[in-house]
Amino acid sequence: MKRILFVVFSCVLMALVGCSTVTKDIEVSAESDPKISFSGYKTYTWLGAAAIVFDEAGRWEPPAYDADTEIKFLIDKQLRARGMSESTSNPDLVVAFAAGIDMDNIEFVKNSETELETLKNIPKGALMVILVDANTGQPIWVGAAAADLQENVDVATAKVRLEYAVKEMFKKLPK
Image (cartoon, rainbow, N blue to C red; front, side, top):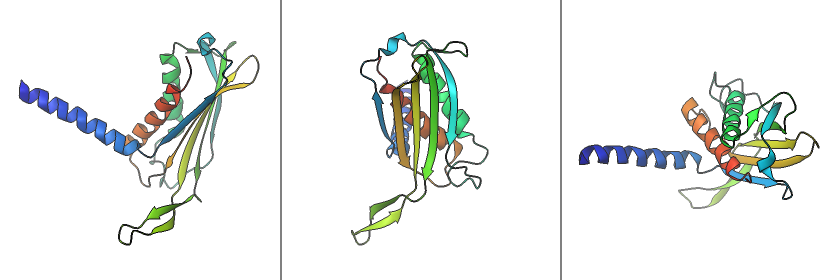
C-alpha cells in the first residue's frame, strides 16, 4: 500500500513540476471596470477571434492543431465554471479574443560560457481575451497572456500552455 501511495504521489509531483516548467515564462495580467458587478452576467455570445499570424509551416503551432478552437473551448470552460451559458439571443456579454506573434522581439540573454548578456531574437506570443457588456458595447474586462514562443512544440505542450494562460487570466476576473 505504501508503495502504491509513493508511486501515485511521485507521478502527481512530476506532473506539477513538469507543468510549472512548461508554463514558467507565461505572464498573465487583467484589467476590469471597478464599477461592474460580474455576478449579474449570466449569458454570453462570441464576437469572433483574430489570429494575427498564420503559421503554415508549423514552426510555432503544431501542424493540424487548431489553436483558435482550443482557445474558444478553454474560454467557454472558464465562463461555464462561473455559471454562465452561451446564448445567441439577448446575451449579457460579448466575448472576443486575439492571438498573435511578434517575430521581431529582441531580448537580452546571458551567454552561459562568458556570462555576458547579448541580444537575441526571441519571438513572443500573446493572447488577449475581451469581455464586452452587450447592452452598452463597453469593454468591462481584458485579460492578457504573453510568453516566449517555443519552436516545434508538440500538441500536448501547446494545450498545457494555453490552458494555463486562460485559466490564470480568468482567476483575475472579479466575482
